[in-house]
Each structure stands twice: as structure tokens, then as C-alpha cells.
Length: 141
Image (cartoon, rainbow, N blue to C red; front, side):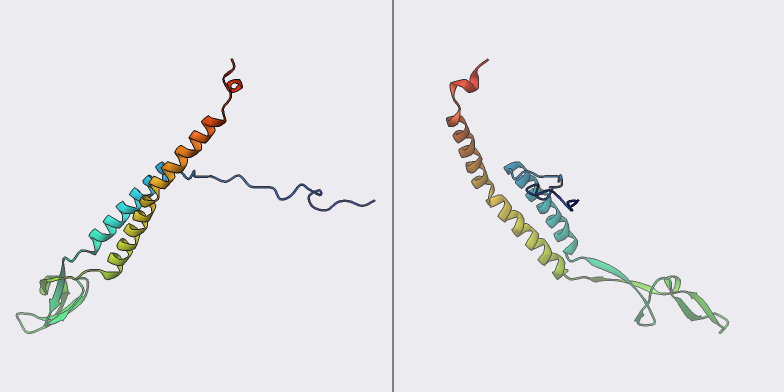
């Protein structure tokens, strides 16, 4: 006796149930708005600003570092650089990678938004075709 292995002839592969997001104008607009919001946040983080830097004896040090200081009695002491250093504020420049990514995201959102009118026209045409195919039998009670 022969035992079949695998699916019977003609059954074909079984499809898994997936979360299907419809291709509708509402989904396109929501997606584009979320993308634009992310691009704006990314752009705002890329703006130039100021940063505070700790210096001790002419070189940049971290606040948690230990610096050697000569005390009043001439002995060498170890103290936190945050206590004995000087804080200076210096300007920062644009973050170029963030600006580029924000521009690309905004451009892609623009492309998605530009396709919404076409989606609306296609959706209306499908509805009109559906209504044209209706017969009196479709309205029986």
C-alpha cells in the first residue's frame, strides 16, 4: 500500500492569515502624516544649538574625571574636575545625517500624499462601476 506524502494533488499550498492593511486613501494620509511628524522631530533635533563643555587647564575633560589640584599648603590633591574646571558654552552645527534623513522622509511622505487623488478617483470609479452592475434583483426584499 502506498501512503501519500504531503498535500493531495490540487490542494496547493495553504495560505497563512495575515494582517492586511487596505490600500485606501485614509491609510495613505495617516501614513504620510506619521512620516511627516517623524521627519519634523528629526529635523528639530538636527538644528544647531549650544553645548556645555568642561575645561581644566586648557583641555576638555569629562565631569566625572579626577583632576590633580595643588592645594593651599602646596600638596597635590585629587578632586572632581566638575568642581575645579570651567564650563564653556560653544555653538554646535547642523547634524547633516539627521537633516538628510528628515528630507528623505518628508519627500517620501510627499510622494504618498501626491498619490491620494489618484486613489480617490480609482475608488470612485470602482463604486460607480459597482452601482452600474446592480440590477432590480439586488434590491428585492
